[in-house]
Length: 345
Image (cartoon, rainbow, N blue to C red):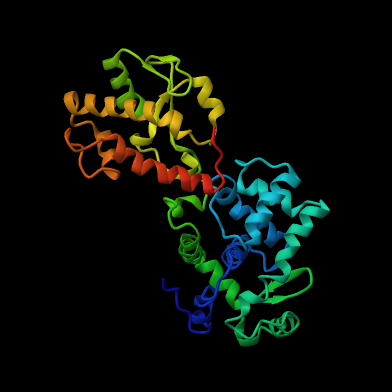
């Protein structure tokens, strides 16, 4: 990805800042700087930047359970700080930042200060040899080789030339960060679906009115009723929830092959827990198979049938939706989700 050119700045050095990355720190460090610069801050307290790092990673770690790698301290700190500060998983990014920027909890501050010795000087390695932290502080103080900021004990000072560049190109630079972050996280999560959509908390989760009205209501109307696969409660039109068999927090989509009617009360308590395949897969598959058969027989142009083509090349009655093929698609996803920290029912 090419960054916008500017004659008086070594843009090629900024473009090289992620060339050697063994942890996620640099990505979130630059995102933190961009956030504060976007707000017009040229002298930025380190605590504010560390708070930004954690707040940017909050949803990815706590909700989507994306792995940053066993050696990555940021993921561990996000999890620890959630407990130390008593914050909820679905809290907004700004609320996380405000809590951490103003915290006086010594244990939280210790978690944040860890990054002081890890990322600030190493990020400057394209501009000069930054292995020696003390030397990096000295060299950055005079903006050696036109580096983007100077390091001080409690804060950083932005290089005015870079400050202007960051403000003018903040959107492109954020895309640069996230693009490189996705590439990095894919090496740690090779089989996790839809990583790009797991880096930022969506403003609003989409409702499932369409899937209910235009698919499952039709199926239930044809069958008369269905049983909840979890509680065996009889479900009829108007008294069921549409729920994700594999949690939305893992698959990050609302495709109909992963959606089924469920008992309202159970759905409200299931949260992001995984189904037990030996108990729940067979009734799940039977319900899905019945739904597809009804749609193919009576409503073959139903738009939600296309969702199944993401798993199966054909929905032909003879060679399409079979138990073995469906299980081959679902079982690995359940295993990967479990390995990433999602709990079972």
